[in-house]
Image 1 (cartoon, rainbow, N blue to C red):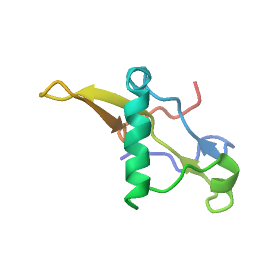
Image 2: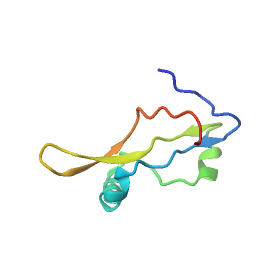
Image 3: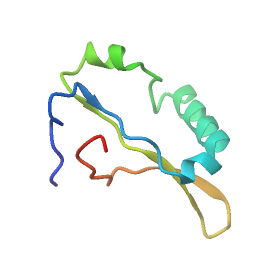
Length: 86
């Protein structure tokens, strides 16, 4: 997969979330809190905290989709390929 290990001279690349995340913000926040409480996720971290441990950090945008049963489901778009901060 063509995922760059750097983006110019940036120390981190954290693209904004998808517009679908706006409609599900509370559900996404609750989902993240549940994952952290269960030990399956860590954070949240500030950019400066991450920079102490990694030369470069890249995150993926969050969003939401509607499942077949009609429920909103938070997603982490790991396929997001935008290479710059535009």
